[in-house]
Image: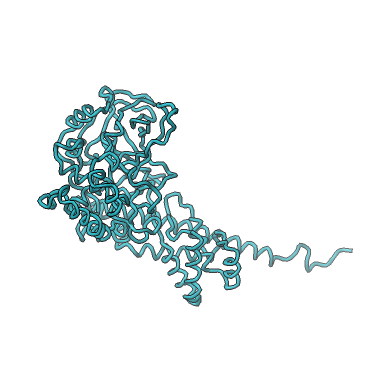
Length: 504
């Protein structure tokens, strides 16, 4: 991620001039070396838990609520062009604010935002090929982004040449600018909900601010992330995605998504969070959630995302010590799709008919069950994955009974199910072009590009998880085999005294 050359000092001057407050005795903004994450915030002295680091007026956040563009465009027309859906409206508003130059309230703020990104959205085909096997490429949504630009943004631009002069199309309203603003939203935005408190409520009552997956923001795990309603194929919930978002249409008010100056300066690292953003009626406050020592970095959180998502959204990966003594990201996860499990069942039980599989899959999805299963460092066998294997292995009579009861089978991990899951994992490992050993050797080289190195880190972490599951499954199968052998031996053993003459 490359930032504009404007200084942190310039941001602080602008921020305070616009009504923001910062405890400059406690918080310092710095430019870190490239290897340490660009810009961020550090503690200038010991900071106690509960200390307010800075406060942002709500009207200083940049969203479709605070930008004047939607009103100038006309709210009815805004909705007619579907700019109230997803991130298109905010992207257009940010384009327009940038085009206003010094006349925009956010001119100085936008001048310090990143001008380029290391995210895979901007990689060439050679670098993208290094991500084969991961789910990243399928989640980029490049084609969806281009379609959205052409079908929503361009018609809106052409309808109002007074607001969007054709002479500014290439500089401020191009497809590249669309990508740039979208990436800024993806990496830095917050979910700033409209204040819903009663007028008689205490103005000091606070609520944690949720994020739309910004780089320095707290995540409420009960809310979905990335509010954009368009996703590519089978991401987390198998929905379409514009390059920059992942939420079902209608689940979140798109006007909640906002850029939050100062708050987006905080970096994040797995398990390191020491500050959170809280809502008040008129302000947002960044508050220390634990003591912070002088010289330490002030961290918000991404929600402890896997490296695949960190790279896709923010252009970096986290590497730290794992419980097993290796290096990686404790939040890493590997997705195995239902069709991968179906393929494994086919390979082991070729006599099961396609028609039966098709009916069972349709019913499974109609019941609201998952079709993508997550495998992570907890090494707990996912119940939905076990349950769908059980479904595929039901006899016809059992299948009919389950369908009549509208009740998917309970997950179980018997030898038959474990053998099928083992095959699915082995097949999933074939999606990667390299082995664990090859990747570990590659990481020892000093001539790798940043993109290549980070791609290796992502795929290596995933493969190690899958290898660990194979080891666990092998152990479980062995345990079951030993138990079965013991039961058989006990059944076949002679009863005490059997065959001997009784004493008289």
